[in-house]
Length: 411
Image 1 (tube, helix red, strand yellow):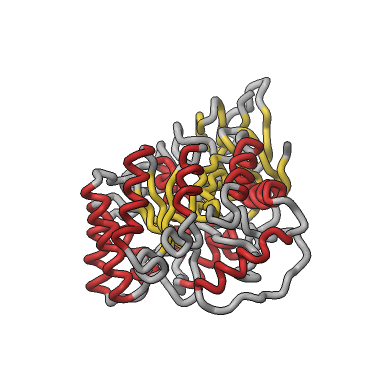
Image 2: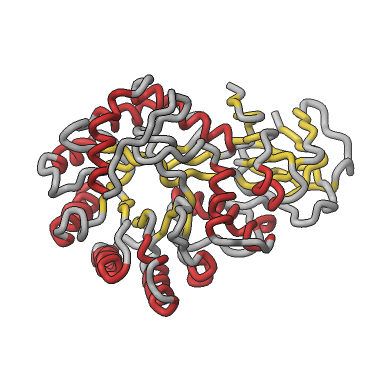
């Protein structure tokens, strides 16, 4: 049955923008017309969207659904400050949650979807401690939620491939068992052997025909070295468009001239970047868009053994992206929404270039007629107002079907 959203604002900047009626049919945006131009046809589901702004749905393209503690009793932070201490603290405590890994993953993913996201890429920790236990929990959650969210699972060696000598055999078992991508972690500073680490990661990519999503927390000269190695491997393996660098802190740690050189190299190799909008490390979003680098937004862990921050609300994380960048202009704030929506879709769909053009004229990933009817509809005056207020009143559509209302899944 077609659905019509009546009286809505379409990704507007001015609060007095003319309202429109939007018809959703067969999984796409079928028509957009001035509000009340014609009475809805019989057999149409009509939803009054007066006072709401329509945006493409969001994506959480860097999640750790196997380690969050959303909805559980608050647990004081006990980890040290180094990356290794954080990793080992999670490893020592993750089994002590109040829900099973599967139940917690379903709970967290449902919260993320209800906030406005219809795409999730989650990393599944695989190491000598948990082996495939966490991966299998995420795989089962993916099957449970298949009708409401597009989910990808990264086989992720959180404890390293060399520091944890038994991890490689379990990672390969995860790849054989249906992982969607291969992960990696700081090949120079954590495993301290970038050649062997990247040999494994890119070797598996070739063997299993999968893409790569590698965590890169490294900064400065070391970060430049590791990023250049990843770029060189991508080109040598012919994996343009199939590699993502998560965090990519190095881009926020070097001078503008070096940022541009690295951004141009990333664009030439069609390597994507994801950020979780952390404090203190700001990516050059404008430069990345200008050079054509795909950028997506994620939430990382949520109130987990790493950090007490995070609530599963992707729209609020878009606010954080704008805030940490110090944006005030509406166009810049709207670009943050674009990163979380079209940017994430391009990464998960394997589109090799960054989104271009106006959202409302994009028939592939935006809001033009013919675009997927994956929508976030929020009660707000404008797109910027939606980000600033993060209203509870939201409708979330997947392929034209209403899947969440006001923070709750509809079934």
